[in-house]
Length: 201
Image (cartoon, rainbow, N blue to C red):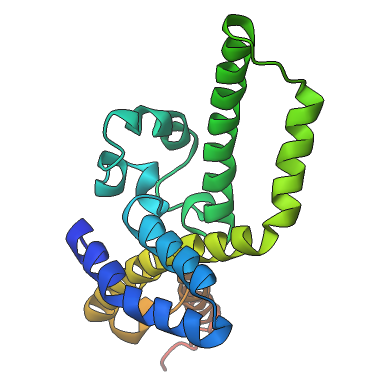
C-alpha cells in the first residue's frame, strides 16, 4: 500500500491533468476551479483514509476530533470508506450534518443574544434555493472530491495487487473465492477417484 507521501505526489502530479481535461470539456474557468479545488482537497484532506489515524486525518489539526465517530463506525478500507461514490457521499453527508448542527447552534445563539431574527422555515428555503441555483457548482465540486478520493483508492488497490502479483503470480490477481473453489474442486476430484482394489495374484 502506498505511503502518505506517495498519495500526495499522485494527487499533485495528477492535478494539472484533471484541471486541463475539465477545462477542455467544459470551457469554464469556474467549473475547472471547483473540480481542481475539490480534487486537491479530496486527495490531501478528504480522502478514504480519514477512517484511520492517517496523514489526511492529521491535516485537520485541532478539528480532527470530528472524525473520531466516523473512524469508530467504519472498518479501514471498507466499501463505505473506499468505495466509488459511496465513500465520498458518506463523508460529505457526515461533514454536512456536523456543519448543519453547528450553523443551527450559532444561529440560535445569535437570535437570543442579538437583534437577529429568522425562522427555521426561512433557513430551509435559503438552503433549498442555494441547492437549486448552484446545482452545477455543487456537482463540479463533488466530482473533484470523488476524483481525489478515487486517485487514493485506486493507488491503494494497485499497490496491493502488485504485491500479490509479485508474491503469488497471476493467481494473486484472481478473486480469492475462485481460487478456493478451484482448490476444493480439485481436491474433491482426487478423493473421488476409484482406487485399484484388485488383489495381485
